[in-house]
Image 1 (tube, rainbow, N blue to C red):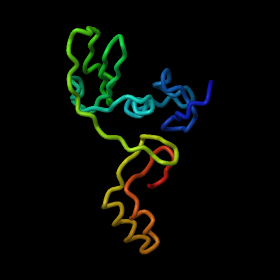
Image 2: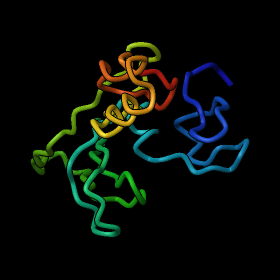
Image 3: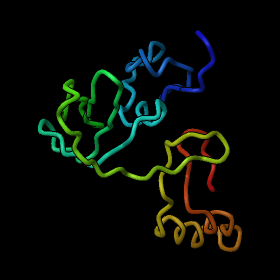
Length: 141
């Protein structure tokens, strides 16, 4: 297997984002949103009719357009007719980690910052000044 920089969200082993929706090392299902962001798909606001999740990922090619639920993997939208106009989806902005270039990030909440200050005092300044946390390399930025 070639080095591609995509790692299992559970065991950390490198896996193939195109073919391994389940890690071959620890049998953990990889979140669709995590794989979609790595593969460069747009995360959009489109409600899934199966589970009600509001986030889907959108892929397009010269042959078809496809929208898949980030939660359950159900097909939310599919179009293989180039005559039909494409719907306008609302993209969800993504934040990329400056250290490992992962989009598997989350915003550091104010409650977390207050908790850090209460626990560590002035030594928590480094975390208080940061806005985002990378779930891939565990860095704050």
